[in-house]
Image 1 (tube, protein in one colour):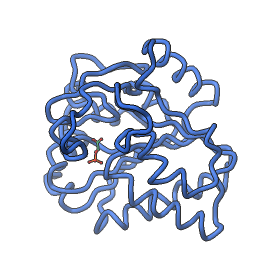
Image 2 (image 1 turned 90 degrees about the horizontal axis):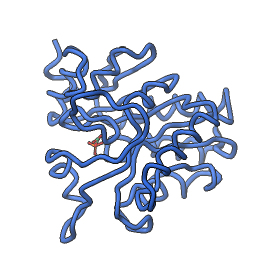
Image 3 (image 1 turned 90 degrees about the vertical axis):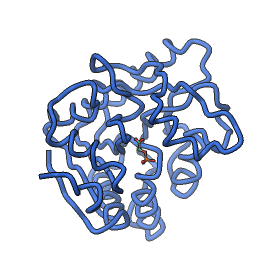
Image 4 (image 1 turned 180 degrees about the vertical axis):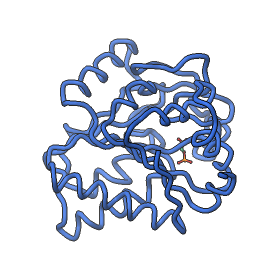
Length: 241
Ligand code: PGA
């Protein structure tokens, strides 16, 4: 696992945005693994600028998102479908049909998870996966657990996740469950980049990089992947030895 500390989230976004663009220049049909939350926004902003400058096209690319809330209409402003539209998809030339998210409102959630996992495989797997990390060490919505998860599944959100994301749901009930890719599926990506910024992530970052590999800290599984780069700001890196 390579760990790189940069001055701030803007610099991190530029480096990762440039990596996404380089991959698409090399392979216009690349399969991109995308994330939501605050951490990926500077990466998406860099990517949009590079697209507007004519450096890159997403016309043949496919994207898969890590997770989606259950029981939240897709058109709700806080759904991850809406987030991706607002933060990235509406600004670039990607074919909406090629943007894949789990359907958190599916009547048969097990079938929906199987459909999603099969589609990732059918398209050859994820080439480059972008991740954030939760304060409790989650990746996607894989919360601390007794075993590492594999394929996509329905998860009950942990109290620390509910607390961290409640600011997005002021005056309304926050979803308590989500569909998420499993840790095993995330690790099948050929290359992984993870962003963590701010002091609130410092404990989780230390455990991910220097702790033992345990499903109680799901991001620690990344230690087993051959091509992971962790991008930190000084606050998130502050507890690393
Ligand atoms: P954040 O969330 O980027 O909004 O901090 C990351 C995560 O919970 O995975």
